[in-house]
Image 1: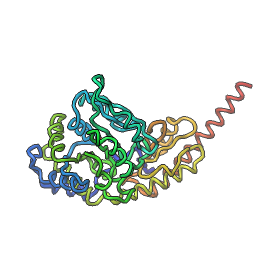
Image 2: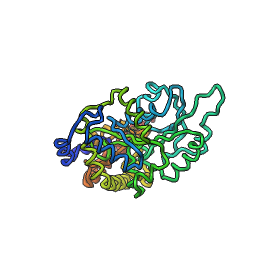
Image 3: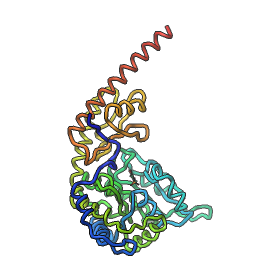
Image 4: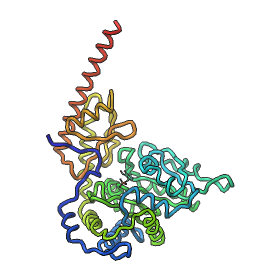
Length: 358
Ligand SMILES: Cc1ncc(COP(=O)(O)O)c(C=O)c1O
């Protein structure tokens, strides 16, 4: 039985071209700034995002942490979405290591924060207040089923915070998915954010790595902080070589993942006992709920060779480079079988429950 792994786009394996590029990569000591492959990748990342400079870091989590360290002082307050990965999925690193306080503003189901709510969250100069120094946004929005935030929406947030001297950091772990969905160059999409991180190791299928991008001055501060958290790597061109291939060859194919996620969402919507609004699925993340026990559903799926995770109060399936259309179709057949099993187990349970009471 073929195992269909829909847990995350992080399970992707490098392409043959990436493996070859790793083997052939020109290397040097990147802490001395002497790895030509890292330098090339950083230049490509700066160019594609329209920022002055970029820095290779080990992960999305490190990219967000180092960006916050480079922007904020201990005791600052930063505004973050209530469903943001920085808040929910990064082990409290911003608090533990950057010493900042997180002020949450509700994300709507499209991953957006209302500009008025952000305005109200900004602290005034009162002596009792910590200074608000950063707004963090996320695009695509993981918890919100891979929802895409548009350039106009980002501009509406920038109009609130920039006049107050507050910067915007974008957790753009999947920003290329957003750009492909919108059919826009990434640089257009991120023009109103001051800095961003994006991941190579998700839909772009690299084994390791993220980049942070911003002004030269910001990136130099980030470089120092990267060293502080142990992220100064030496012959990191081995990693960067895959990133170069990814930026050249793996971006446009994300549309295939989106199409597969769409097919998955439409198919799930027709499975009795499964609840999903397929129109909410814009990119590669599909989140749905089920009648009955979610944990049992996930366990039965795993027994049937379909690996998934939970997200919020739902079940999450993510399409990626390792998933083909026939995998999606097979996953739907297996999911329908699990749902049928759960429904009949439920009705037997209610029958015997009814009997017991009679
Ligand atoms: C939106 C978002 N940001 C950041 C990260 C962290 O990335 P990493 O797992 O590389 O630390 C993830 C990981 O799934 C993510 O979904």
